[in-house]
Every structure is written in C-alpha cells, then in structure tokens.
Amino acid sequence: MSKIFRYEEVMKRVEEVINGLALKPGDKLPSVRKVSEELKVSHKTVLQAYALLEAKGLIVSRPRSGYFIDTVSTGTTMSQDNAIIPLPAVVELNTMATTMMKNARVKGVINFSMLAPANELLPVSRLNKALNTALAGMGVDNYQYPMVTGHPCLLKQIARHTLEWPNGLPVDKILITNGCMEAVNLCLDILAKPGDIIAVESPTYHGILESLEIRGLKAVEIRVDNTTGLRLDDLSVVLATYKITACIFMPSCHHPLGCSMPEENKKQLVRMLGERNIPLIEDDALGELHFEKNRSLPAKAYDGYDNVLYCSSFSKTLAPGFRIGWLSAGKYQAAAQKLKWASNISTTGILQEALGRFLESGRYPAHLNKLRLDLQENVSRYLSAVNRYFPQPVRIHMPAGGLSLWIGLPADVDTLQLQRKVLEQGIGICPGHIFAASQIYNNYVRINYGAPWSARIDKALKKAGSMISQTLQMKTIS
Image 1 (tube, helix red, strand yellow):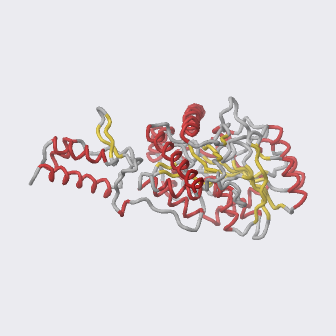
Image 2 (cartoon, one colour):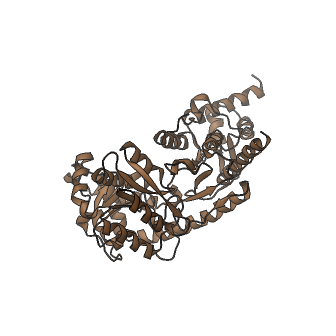
Image 3 (spheres, one colour):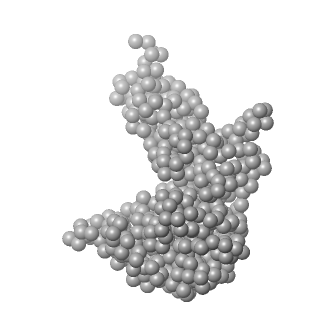
C-alpha cells in the first residue's frame, strides 16, 4: 500500500466521522496522536490527511489547540446525507423556522436567523447548579403535575421583579406559560374569533402573524418609527376606521427594529385603548435587553384599566431551551388560567423551580447587566462588518436594545431568494417579507447578533455581502 493512498484513506475515514456524527463548526476533531493510534498509522500520515481536509475547507487548525470543524468555506465537502436541508419552494413560516433550526443544530449552519443569545452569553454553570439543587431537593410532590398557575418560588420572584413598576403585579396575577408565544396565543384564544381584526405593528415578529393566520384572524398594520416605536397618530386613525378586537404591540425593545416607545407614549397608548375597552396584548419578551441606563418600563406598568395582557419570558435572557414564559392578563386572568388548564394543564415544574432558585440567588440583575454590555459590543462589531462588506446603500438603524439588526438592502435585492443562496454556503438569514402581512419589506433582512464576535462570524458576513453584490451585478447585466 503506497503512502499517498494511506493518508487519503485516513482523510476519507475522518470525513466519514464528521458526516456520521454530524459534527458542527467549532467541534474539535480527535488529536493527531489519537487518530494515529486508532488507525495504526504514523503521525506524519495523519498530519498529511488533516492538511488535505484543511485545504478543502472542511477543518481548520488552531495553534496549540488542535483541529476543528469549519464549514463556512465554499470548499466544504459534505455527504448527501449531511447536506444542508433546502427551504421549501412555497414559503411556510413554520417549515422555514424548523428547517433553519435543524440546519444550525445538525448541519453546522451559521444561523443569523435564530433570535436568542448564544450559550457563551448565558450563566450556564449557575443555571446547572440551580437545576441540580432543584433535582436534589425533589420531594414526592415534584413528580406530580405542577400547579396550573406555576411554581410558587418562580411566581414570587417574578412578582418581586415588578416592584419598581407604578402598578406592580401580585403573585395571583401571574400565570407561567410555555414561552412567551404560548402567552400570546392564550390571549388571542380568549379575545378573538375567526374573522376578527387585530392591530399589529409593521414590521412585527413573524410568529405573531403566523398565530393570526392559523386562527383565521385579520391583521391591520400600523407603522413603527425607527426611534419612537408605534405611531400613535396612525393607531388613532385605525381605531376610528376599523372595529379592532385587540392589539398586539411591542412597546419596549421592538422586534425587529430594536426601538422603544417613550414613557409618555406608552401611557398615552394605555389610555387610548383602555378608554375604548380594546385589549392590549403586550409582547415584552425582549424588554430586559435595553441598552439605556435605566429599564424602559412596559406599558403594563401604567395599566390603570386592567386592560393590558402582559406576555414575557426568560427565553431571551436566561434559558431559551427551558421555554419558560409568563402572562399577566388583567381582567382576563381567570379566563387565561382556565384555558391554560384545558390546553396543557401546566408548565414543567422542575425547570420553573430551577429558574426560581436562580432568581432567588440575586444574580439575575448582574447577569442582565453583563448580557446587555456583551450585546452592545456585538452590535458594534456586526454593524461595522455589515457596513464594510454589504453593498451600499444599506439602511441600518442603531437598535436601542434587543437581539437583531434590521437591514434595508438596495431595492433590487429580493432577500427571500438571497436566503436560499446564502444557505447553500452554510449561512442562515431571515428575509424581511415575513415581518409584515403586506410583504412590503422584500429587500430587508434581519441579522441577529446574539452570538459573540468571531472570525467565523466575520467570514460569514463577508460571504453574504459578496453574494449580495453578485446579485446586484447580475441584475445590472440583465
């Protein structure tokens, strides 16, 4: 057997391991010594094999650290079974979201479309400790169904977190849910029936539009100012024109723009809807991720009408995978609790207790402060890269909080087509057209900055910018 054949054989074996185990970018490969021992070949043979894999763009070497998976390069080689999953030809938001999540988790795609902070920005070790403590202290009752309202420890901590509000929340006005979206969906099911009209922002979170669609509800869109949020004058016109059943707004850290309404505007919003008895479903999932010195309070904090149904969660600040959210539904609280019981009885108790114990430790404020600083640093890096690599003119508003950049590309760029092209290169983005029922943001893209800055992120944004430029050049030629 020749020496050349031997290291090619080693290279093939390593590729099989990468594909078979679905290793992701950043995963470390076995050491040269270990591969040498297992395959009974010399260190030099393994080094030659690794050098070929690195030249193909499949792996990357790091001095004094070893070899790691790197799938950003266009030279990446994958087996058919491990190829990136293509998006459906007909746009379906649910399929798009689940496909992108699988591509990121299993196929190693750099996913700028996932709206969550990376593990590096979360207090994982302290959450694990809280979870282990909760598990160690489990009594007989913890193996039974939790209370429908939620774990007492967590409910108490959430209530304490609202003490600074003008109208704080008592424990009996809080209902634990499976993430913020279950809270929003409970509100919609309580308030609306098919054919009813719901006022939403434009742009708005695509999950809200999906929830309206599957319930047969109609959406009327109200523009959002890049700085001051929801345009109250436009809302006034809509309220005078249509019979609005309810409104779903994000007054703090709007998604995807990242802006927040001034406090006086929030108070005016609460008055406008409270006097008309039109319920406000407030999505405050991102409110804690503000970049200002002081927290911009939610509209619920000013609710003297008991008319705001407040939805929030810990998915964007502590543990996305725990899926722990909560709802304070004002005068609709009893109806929400009844519907929660009928829907799924309760939310996982042990995870609630773990979060409650973490909050009880008093470490949450310090974590939030650090998370905000990390995200502000990310914003600066991501913005710089977009301005450096994306073809001009590019419209970007500096967010005042949240997890995403809302980027307007040249008018000729269709970001839905762009999404499919960059996905082939192992990069995931979120096309703008899914953020409005009227699909008026076809040249916009949402880029999330929840992952710490790295050479991989820089390389991916540079590649995306290059592909946008190529798209524009082709349109110019044609």
